Amino acid sequence: MSGFNFGQLQEMLGQARQQYDALRQKMAAIVVEGTAGGGMVTVRMNGEKQVLEVRLDAGVARDDPEMLADLVRAAVNDAGRQVDERLRGELGQITGLPLGGLF
Image (cartoon, rainbow, N blue to C red):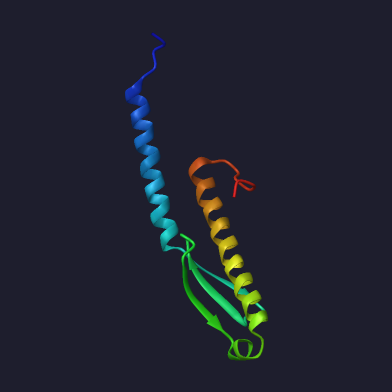
């Protein structure tokens, strides 16, 4: 036989699962704010990319609905990028590898 140790593999998989679960809990607790239009739109998002809150400047909501849609989209994308950066950092700490282009 090749000497492959299934017990060792199971242990490694168990450790990886624990690290994954810990990372998911840590990411769920993270909250970021994405903004657009100089703060006219702010989006709060957690580390699972769930939008928690949207704040709108009263003027933009009333005056220009198309611009409002663009600003909301930009703020959500900004928050999503921040979550990705945090996730890269957390995964980099776990793996010890630079993960710049992975996400």
